[in-house]
Image 1 (cartoon, rainbow, N blue to C red):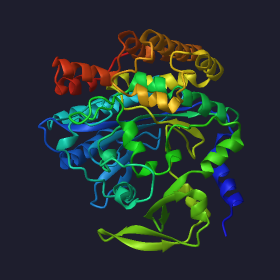
Image 2: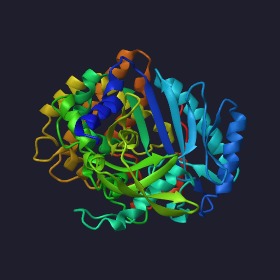
Image 3: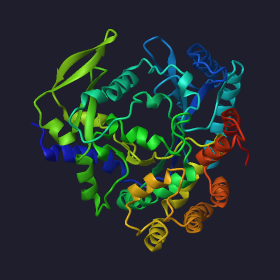
Image 4: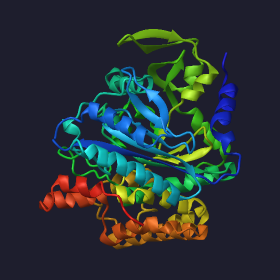
Length: 466
């Protein structure tokens, strides 16, 4: 019998204990949509060809994942842990950079890999661009990579019609992982700072929405500037709202945080190398059962299977919070859309600069009356600030001033590092000055018929120089 104490101890070992060491590394993951400029589906054969060309060009990369059709979907360099892979489908490429001490090293390698891949795709009239939702998604085949994890994930997302008694509505985009792209940052945070980091960074999610939104569902919704938010919230990942989005609580201490971890849902495990998906359920409820009925992919179809819960199943607990704890002992910030490529490092720079400025950041928020202390939670404010039209009760001059104060604080944190990384924040100052973000630029231009989406595809795909 697996009791609560056993679950609690294992959660601590998995998520809290790894943070009990002094490190100061940066990890960056950037997902990027692939686009067929002929306005047809991305040609997966071209994708596989370019994957092979990349490995020939960068010989240190070794095969790290092969799909059921024999195609490589992940390459890894064991010397620096850089990974170039495809996320969910072959419509979306990901550059997961190995941990480093500084952003310039990450940016140099990312820019080199990206430029090679983009130039290779352009030989076939395909390209890459820095957008959080593929602007040509309607032309694509929304097929998951035929591998254990991605077949299971898509099967889970498609199962929304089976949830009859949950107090939520579901959108009808279970394939959203195949056309949405994020820019994620992992930072080392010591156990002593864990609670404060989550509490304080959660409060600035509305400001991050204002600065970084770049996910438009073009042709269907031109009002929500970060459509990635509702895509996660109103999917099967959001059956338990604790598994996604923001924290609605201020944690008092690590025990509070552990209680939150116990409140999460689990929806998959592995047995003998195969994923088993089942109805999303609370972690403690899962471990209280003698057996759970799930589905396993076998010979091209899903079959029912009964499994006995094991304490090791906590390895497969997969929350998708805006701020996640990882088994690596890092805090992962995952609420930001993929940015225009030249601005890619702005996301990591913003979080890195604020990481050691938590007291000052909390003070800025505590004293603000532009958006905070107006009767809205941070979650509600983020929902408001991912709209194209900002609510009239918010003073735009004051909002820009608040945003600048926070970016200034990030800049001061980076300046103290003495490397010059604050240069990556320049694009945020421009956005604040112009009262815009990448999504708003597209919306304004399309509404005025100034530029076509193809011009943004080209522009947002350009590499910057520093």
